[in-house]
Image 1: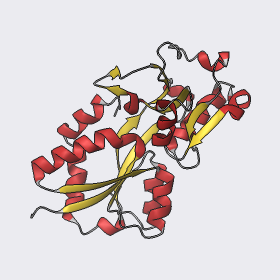
Image 2 (image 1 turned 180 degrees about the vertical axis):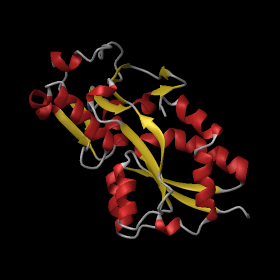
Image 3 (image 1 turned 180 degrees about the horizontal axis):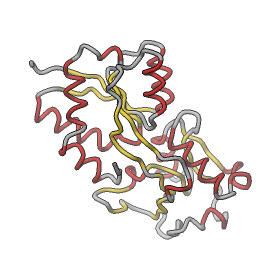
Image 4 (image 1 turned 60 degrees about the horizontal axis):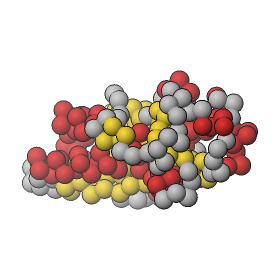
Length: 231
């Protein structure tokens, strides 16, 4: 097979690992993965409108399933490439304690989340606040980003002192990059099962199939695990 190209729509939380995986995929196979990053909900709307993506890496399992039902994804190609973890993060050391009690103290003006309608990590954040019984008291302080990347930007730039982001955005090789964080217990929200699927437009592209196979391989999995994802 000659070196080819595949266009991949990637959920924003998976930006850093995907950039690394695309680089080693190209080294090992000669194929290039052209990456676009954004919220899963926005990609769904774009795919419905005929966007030329060939593979989708979603932040949930529901969107790829729905695309399959609607004939916009290739049956039998969907699989879980990562299980995501949600984290409450602040750039300030010591602001977020290891039990998330800061949410109850209210010592902050704004709390960043991704839009729960568009971003599965945003839905998980709202789920968690609901289960903690804190959503009514904190609702007025929520600032919403369109994707988890935007929620992260709010906190990274200081526009919000803390926010719910993906663990992968604030860790590297298993360690917190900066600031303070509380990894939200997985029982506070539905599992963040992140699935990939080949889209109908990519059905006849052998590079799409090669990319999906690579994503299941040991090299890709080692990268994925290094960013705090589970399987």
